[in-house]
Length: 245
Image 1 (cartoon, rainbow, N blue to C red):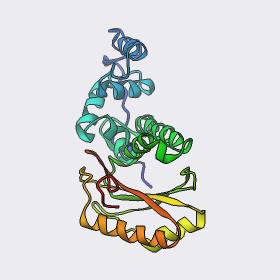
Image 2: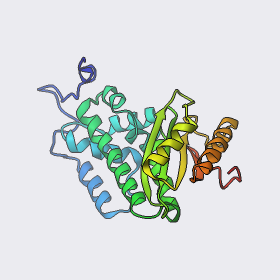
Image 3: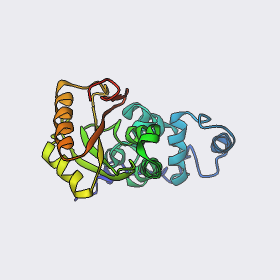
């Protein structure tokens, strides 16, 4: 495989040319960012400043603010950048693999933290944590992803099963496979989840139909479908809350 990072190398200033940042931070800009980060609240830094600081940790000799702003412009917001495809990040002008990894690892850490929170408590009594986890993981995907959360009789998460990724706006989900997997892992219940790359979480007719099919098939096998959650950038929709289950 070709080394695509060479298309947009993480360039340092050429010798003899004055760098906008030479590693000493003469203007005190990064020191001020650090102070605001450590002493302020979660909103102390703007989205582009968060990205700027993450990039600066690995690239102290250049001004990372323009790169951060261009990433926000391309991917929409902080979440869009941190959840972007690593290769797309690496190929962005003035990025490269090192910088892409510095941003990608934050998204990985956030997803793991959110998933740990979901695993530690009964899912139905920790609903907001579940929604947070699903939103972090799926809201900014460019393809439709289907997953099934299989639960025990105590509603503890047994398995977070990725059924598959589809095209830009659809992914196949097979009733038999969903129910079979539930029987294999000894699940008492399940929660269906998928995302809408369009951003709107409103259910389609097909979403409602497949939910009814799986709900009935699961019932015949002694399992309950608690909900079908649709995730989008604009929020989420619970089919149970809408009275569709």
